[in-house]
Image (tube, rainbow, N blue to C red):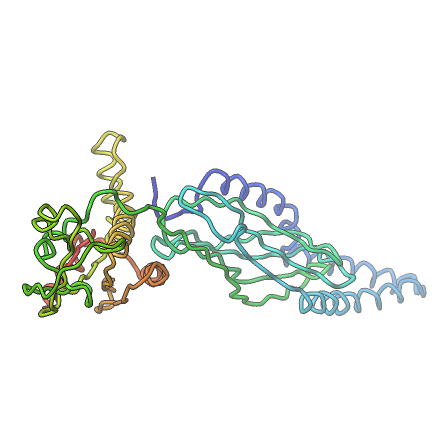
Length: 376
């Protein structure tokens, strides 16, 4: 098992093998030694015939053989310059466990085909890494879109990126090649789809909200009840004054004076055990427990769910994670869109294999103000 290569599945391997088999015949002809050896042998043969027979035809053949490499190279360079490339995931959105296609298209608008064209594609998960660049060989039709399609499955949350790193074309005689770096890429983000849990988040009840709350400043404490009023839809249940509710036989909520701040902070651990640790745990369990492979996924699901619970409770809060470069990234979360943006930023941060690294740095830096919700 290998959580690093989210593109490394049976469908992809089968497609890669097909491409390699189809390209073997093309690659066999692209050896410069073979091409130049054949060309030189033909040229010497024509030269000998021209010397011994002194016939116009052989002089014409010699001139043609001298011109052909130049013509072949320039025509290939012309077509190569006109090529238009694109790469995308289709569809552009996918959930964990879902499948889509990686589509690479090479548009050749010219009237000339390309006998042997090579394109190098690299794919990776920004959390877990990915495959080494893979080169595919094909022929390009004239005035046509030449497409490569690969099935892709996603078994992890995160950002997935596919990139065309370089292209190369061989001339019609396979004596020369033209190439260039491309750097054209596409990304697809797989977000958690978990919903808030049905149970009440304990921290909302334990951090002072059972006896008092502030209706103006979310997450703050006060021991001074300044007013009471009748419950209206949208008021938090923790603000209900249960004794008065029982006496008056209707729901009464408390209005409190803001005297202290209790900011909520969700700290996400981007912790994922190394492949070696995961493999060891999997072997020790007799191949029955692969939970270590999904450590980071579980943390992401939990952080997503807890954050939605805070939003549903009417709380604005800080969302943070640790970057191994040595600092924390903070986002103020007031709505679901803010949460999506925060997760996207986290996806571009390398994960680490040290358990509770973010929490230890957070505490050591003295940042533990307000209420910390540690997820990891």
